[in-house]
Image 1 (cartoon, protein in one colour):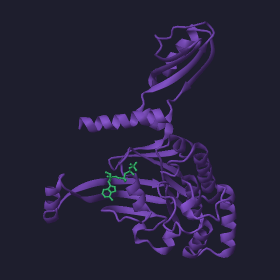
Image 2 (cartoon, protein in one colour; image 1 turned 180 degrees about the vertical axis):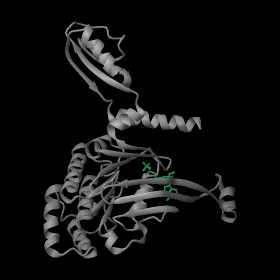
Image 3 (tube, helix red, strand yellow; image 1 turned 90 degrees about the vertical axis):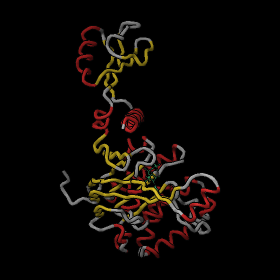
Image 4 (cartoon, helix red, strand yellow; image 1 turned 90 degrees about the horizontal axis):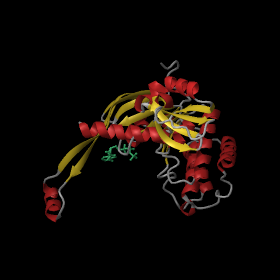
Length: 334
Ligand SMILES: Nc1ncnc2c1ncn2[C@@H]1O[C@H](COP(=O)(O)OP(=O)(O)OP(=O)(O)O)[C@@H](O)[C@H]1O
């Protein structure tokens, strides 16, 4: 239950695209000029969730699950087929000027606008005019963003000449120049090398902590999700399949845990205690059913001289893999 007014409130949101279909071949192409056929794609179906101010939430799902469509609706780019959305109390698709000054949608696949001949600094100046940022605030924000995102060397360069990582840093800074209170980040680290991705993650966390900004983030990078998002909303085929924290996700979808144990005796045989995933000298990694963890650790402790023992959740990557496999299974069975 959220205590304050939510920053984002989505109720029964649905979005259906109407897409033209036609058979392959020239004859079918000619026929489609006269008889156009369409098919409905239900990209988002009765989605409901709320996000409290200042929360960073991971918005996860398989390819085509409806994440980008939802982000575009929240950012006011798309008008949904039905449903109610309020972001900071406003209806996004009305695109009121005060609303657009309070939010930013940043897409890793297209991090920066459509004037590639401008220099980065010119783009900042243009953004200043568009969003009415006063000069002292502009200078302050630019200095801060430049130092956090290491922009000094690229300010005088044309956008067309920037690498993907440089574009992403410039695009983020540009979007945050007017200090939006809600960020919609769609794959912000896609295609970035490990240190560029880390810089972006650190920056997002700092920005949210400093300004109290609310963040909804999609990413297929589990490092992004693990480091940034205490809460995860999982969508599948346009609907919510899970909403909670990482441990809840693991226990909802993955019935196993790992026990890593170091035994003083050499080469112990622990196959009677669980699935032995790895065995090296006196170190063993066991996979056991979640509910059997307390009994198994008790048995290990009473039967062996234990040098070290820890109980671990499977990695988030592993959990998501199993979640997606499970969702595919449900789909296949339907
Ligand atoms: N402009 C469009 N016209 C028609 N169908 C679309 C359009 N945009 C998206 N879709 C369809 O809507 C569904 C959801 O797409 P969406 O891009 O929202 O998914 P996603 O979860 O962001 O996927 P990904 O992880 O691959 O980016 C898909 O079936 C997609 O093909």
